[in-house]
Length: 106
Image 1 (tube, rainbow, N blue to C red):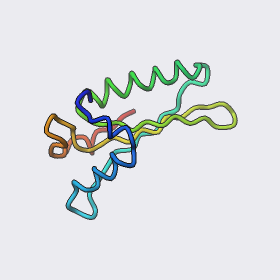
Image 2: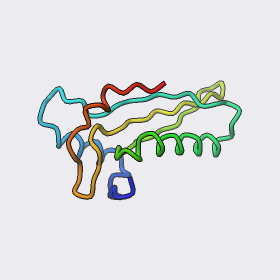
Image 3: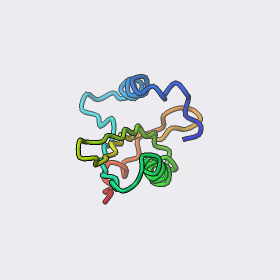
Image 4: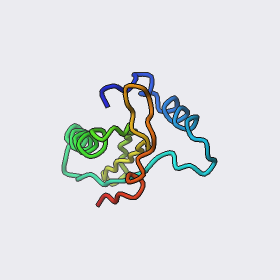
């Protein structure tokens, strides 16, 4: 989200902060989503497609998204997305959104 501190662009800082917030040892820290990306798109188009999807589906809800795009030897690309389970607000991480952990993405 727009109000996310720049320091969270460093994924190790982000996920360490997320871990600090949780009190339970078995807390769900993130939701992971994997997507295949059309091979026919050039890398710039793939990035734009994933960025648009992530913003429209997750970031607008307040989730912070950690996105990584990888390509295999055959040229197929995949997006690996980690999402925070708590929305980020002006005052920091808010309470968990329970429905986020049960939402299915197809």
